Length: 281
Image 1: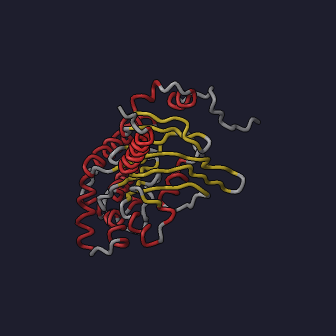
Image 2: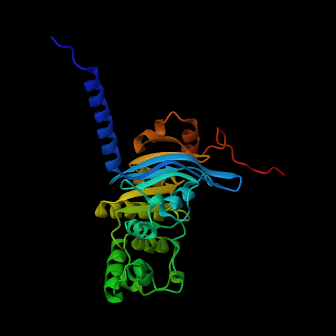
């Protein structure tokens, strides 16, 4: 008999690896590779590697000042990283021209930490802002959509005519969520969605987030330090510490991560490897 050619097997192996890599890339809605960012001497992102699979909810946990918000701003193009690559649907957004980036940004919705509503606009116009300004939609059509989205988050037509200052914190957060889903985005970012809310209203917002994402079939990337949020909205969880992802796993694996940093964080313990810098008198 004739011996098989080992080079043929090697080619098969290489092809299999390439095929697997292509599949991983195609499944990834967002991917960050070795992303670095510093401000002066302060290193904020120190080689972030993160993949958000299509249709999944990834929640990034970590203390204040660990780089969570900067990471999201890099994906959105608000901040440009010093080095690294950021892909949305397999395309490197850092190499796009402004027109290409504009198209990609239309896929995104965003719920900001403080709701970030425009005080001078009524609620419905806040929700419709991106439709009117970004997509040049007629005001009547945009208002109809805005009122539909407000209804989805449990707010009435009457609330649409109010101004943000007339709303409670929880209602403002709902308006922020309605604006985030107004254009039926493929990708939604949630920046501390429950900050400043009482536990009951926080749970209401978490439920609304889950329902909104399910309705849209969206891919979501959230950042939070609220473990109740994590347990409700996450499929997968990653922890950031000193600008690096130090652990990732499923929501169910968080409690048995075997990682001292994760363990300290989820239980809110002062003692542990994460040391808060507190100035002693």
